Image 1 (cartoon, rainbow, N blue to C red):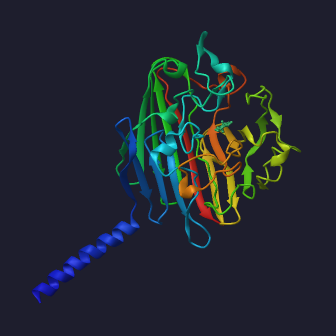
Image 2 (cartoon, rainbow, N blue to C red):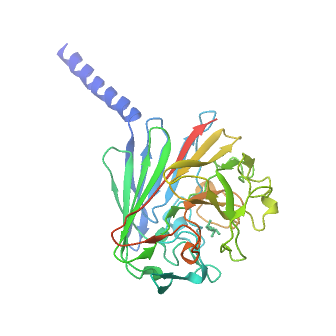
Image 3 (tube, helix red, strand yellow):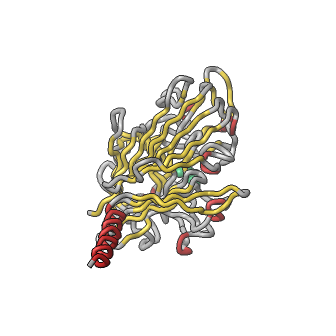
Length: 368
Ligand code: GLA
């Protein structure tokens, strides 16, 4: 009898642990690979409903977002690679990565802060793109699991002069997976010299999780009645144009592919968000094939909608060997407008000593 009670107790403890593990959030950390002898970690966050998000501390990149489709089958809605070699390949188009110090382009890499001229590293048709040659996407971030098993924190010190940007910039990014299937990204930064800053995440989504080769059937709505037209090297002309009666109009839900061919090169522009300061939902995407629906909320004034125009099927080490062909995935990069440091009429991207930069973006998933 005593033995039976002991066994029963052991069983009950084990059972309660299992139930607890299935119901609560969890974070598992494992080595993803090595760069010059330094370990790169991958953190996998799981919430109570089984949604999973993985992040590596190389580039702070989101590597997986696994959500259920309308039939209850789990699928990964992010493009990505199976190993560190994939992320290190020269042509990696910033898959899932954190972007800084300046997301998108600065014309000729040249800008002025408080009367002093600076030159950011040139890496894109004579322009500076996504922070230069070694942007925040190409460095190893310090990483820790935060209490509560639903967040991880990444930090990086960008030294004074790095890639042509002034000031020692201390950056902190917190990724959280909520019980409501939201992936929240919170950025903060401080500097010891006046500088410019524009941080974002460059996740590429295909909500069909590999079923559809392109995102042309995805339906997008943007809370934006105007956008920044660009020149031939994708630098804003400075004009603000209304989207009405143009292919840029996503004020009502519209297939990404509907007017795609009418836009030279495809969509790769900043839309100006209709919003007050603070966090607000400004975009939604629906994939009819899977029933997955994603909303985007942000504190930022703009969003870069990019239809993966430069993807050409040549990337190696892809998940399941998928060929990421042109338009295989889209990005919705929340940001300040491109080239703001050279455009006095755009919202300022200057950060001064004593100030704290904040940006919050939330990608939330559901089934419709
Ligand atoms: C951003 C840019 C694009 C392209 C991609 C990365 O979305 O606006 O022009 O450079 O990043 O390939």
